[in-house]
Image 1 (spheres, chains in turn green, brown):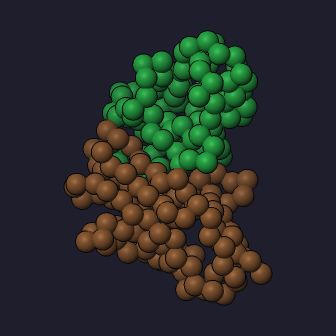
Image 2 (cartoon, chains in turn green, blue):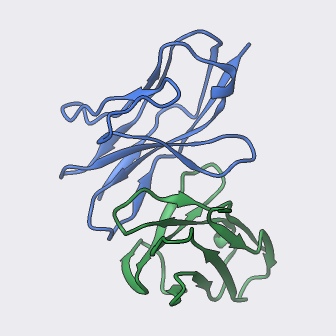
Image 3 (cartoon, one colour):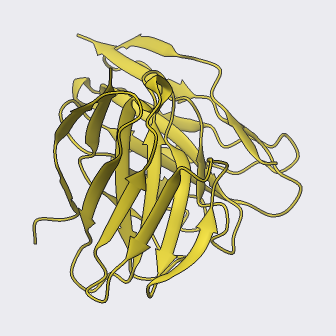
Length: 112
Length: 110
């Protein structure tokens, strides 16, 4: 098993644009969580999905949204990008919402 | 709101010396505490969690509810321990995900 996979690896966008990041969980994992990691900081929780339902949301504006598909993969969407959205976006999967989280390699988003 | 504090941004020790990475938390309930590690060019991975009370790669951590601490310790540091270490808290229920500290960069000198 390749573990949690994320695409793309790197992304460059300009202010005001929209971006979609993708995550494929480990086979058998039904929960996906998204985190934002700004340089020099620890990961900050954005969303958790379990069985296609939103189970938790962190302190992020409504410009951030996510969804989970029937195959348990997930997308994170960010609208109206700001310079401050530049960060590493991490996806983590777990068997259920309370179990150990396994992290992907992340998507590096740069907003110019 | 919960918070995790790792006071040391960088910690440098010599090989064979003891290591202690500090972690303090604030949370009114009974949290679950974790240590995550990120080796160079690798993804973030779980090192240990307090409920399992295991020793992983020689590291241990004891939850001290009185001092609200969860320090990570190893009696004899090895060069392969050099990495970024993050302390994290889970409040339960899934609503808040994991709350991470800012991390400590551990460097083991030969």
